Image (tube, rainbow, N blue to C red; front, side, top):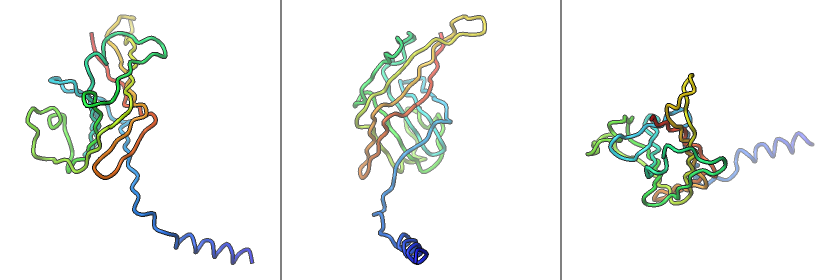
Length: 167
């Protein structure tokens, strides 16, 4: 009897209701390095046809060590933006940093951060002789929400990565 009930439950699970085509949005840029545009305050990561872009004020990556457990906190707003895009083809630095955006690849989907905080922790970088050579800025998103025209997703904490500046 237990076998029949087990088979019935197994068969029932294969014929369960449709989930309504729920699509869980997310991204993973962990293996990509942070890049920057020399002409503006854009920091970004590229992974094939995906882009994660952050606009920060210069004060966010000041070459000054942050006190322990006191990161610089930058609110996500219209000035300090975080943007995730999917494109129709692969991207390059030139595509992102060009003054006149190229017509290809085109944006196929875009999610803009609508709330949250960008935290920056700055530490010194030293060479083998213990000479100060620059700074590492660890950037993390906290309670960040992304929205597009028809869906949204959130992260409680997302590590954008380490951005290095030289003296």
